[in-house]
Each structure stands twice: as C-alpha cells, then as structure tokens.
Length: 355
Image 1: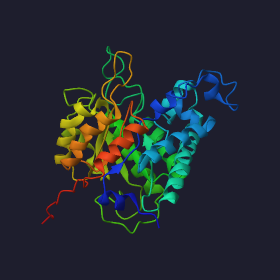
Image 2: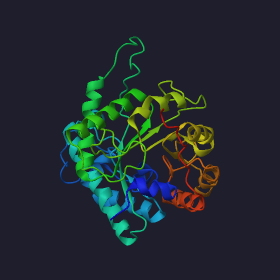
Image 3: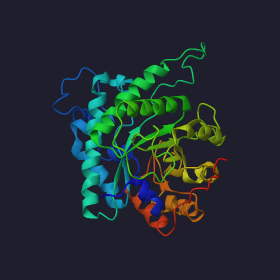
Image 4: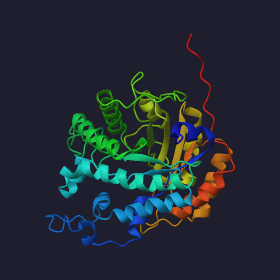
C-alpha cells in the first residue's frame, strides 16, 4: 500500500513542483491550441486560459507534470489555479468549472501514478490547487466606495465547493489553498472544504499521527495545505496581515502544512520562512519565485542560485515541504531536491498537554 503523505512528510523534506505557467509559455501556444476542436467556435478569446489546456491539450499538461516528477518532485499541483466559476467568468466558461477540476486532477493523477509505479519507495502525491480568485472579500475594487464588494462570502464558498468536488472526484491526495493574499478568501475555502466533507466524508484513515488528521472529529477528510503570499518588504499580505496574524487566522483548519509562495524570491522570503518555522505547530512549506522579475517581467535567477539559498533553510531545520513558484522550472526543482536531500525535515514542536 502506498504511504500516505502524512507518513512521507515525517521521513524527509518533500519536494513540491515548480511553475506551471512558466512551462506552458515554453510551448508558445496560440489561440487555436487553447480552443482545440471542442471550442473551435467559442465566442470569446480563450488564449491565456491555461486551465483549459487540461481538456484541450492534456498531453502538454501531463508532460509538464512528468518533467517535474523526473526532476524529483514528490508533490505535483493540479492545473487548476483559476478553475472556479468566478475566475472562469473572464472567458465566459463558468459552466466548465467542475469539468476543468476533474480533468486537471486526472492529468496529474496519471503522471503521479506512473512515477509511483516506477519507484514505490518514493510515492508521488497530487495536490489539488485552489487559487486565490481574481476578486477579494476584504478589499473594495472601488476607491470611492470602500464598503463595496464585488463578491460575497457565500459566492466564494460556493465557487470553491464546486472546485473541491471536482478535485476530489478527480482523485487528488491533498487540497492546497495557495497564493493567499486575502485571508478571508482563504477562510471561505476552508469553510467550503469542511462543509464538503461533512456532507461527503471519506472513509476514516488509520493514520491519526499528525495534528489535524480530520477536520470533522473522526470523519475522514483530505488533508489541507495552506500557502500565503507576503507581497513586499513590509512582511504583510496584500490585505494587510502580518505573517503571525495570517497563521492565527487559518490554524483552526488544523492544516497539514502552512507556508509561503509567490511574490518574493528565495532571498527576500528567507526571514519570513525563519519566522514561520518558529510559529507553526504544523508542518511548513515554501515555494518562492525564481528571484524577482526583471523589467520585462521575466525571471533570471538560475537553478543553482535558488537552490543555494534554500539549502540554508534546510540546514537550519526550517522546512518540511519546498519547491518553486513563478519562473521556476524542472531544473530549479532538481537543484533544490539535490541540495535539501542531505538534511532532515523540520521537527514539529512538542505541545504541552492540556491540564
């Protein structure tokens, strides 16, 4: 039987994959590639809707997953960053949200299962990627009306519920709420996950050995990974929270891990990862960008440079899961995996038992 992610994370620092968008850009796809035969006559442009490629060009998405697995990734993320009715409204493809999540999860599942079969001692896991949305619950899009919200909490929770249903039906191992810049959006995702599994509990797992195995007091649920985004040198999220405030706001979800991704390169993210390692009672994750973007919006940091910075984090015992975000490639992931393999994972703090 394949080890669970809860078992593997105790044994070594797990490697999560790198950027999906960066790899898709390498294919230099045109409008017709995104449309495929099925959407040949779609009434709006769809180029740039990367999630749609899981339906129209699954060969490309599966191929990217395999490149990251070959580089050493233990965890690959589904191509579902924008697979919600809210985000897909940009292309008038709201009706495809559930199908996009199922298709993307199956693409990742095919690749992960192939590599697990090649080496059962190194099982590979699929993380269902739940993005932050293109609308925020905490901030008004209208500077003249600070109380206005473009979307309600119930709308966001409903959108995430449909995404979660698709990811679970597609066969993911863990749910990853990522790139969080508005914690209220993330709380809606947490609520949606909890509510979904209350109504659709999974069979109980025999592994109760990590904090927060079940969200539901004994009924089964997939583990949750949570990853926020510190947007600048202030050390705060876009909606204004410090890292500690962010952690306190989401710890009620009893996540498998809490971490940071995107916005910053490894050099800029370092102090925040150090702080996080001291804060968290759960496992930690980090997947920074390949440095900061240049004047053309491209990333110049080389794989060995990113890996050298992250090596110190592993040596200091700050990491349980690590990988890359924007601008990172399979070469970045291979260098990171090679550098951190010689270090033990961060050990969870021992909590005093309640009297």
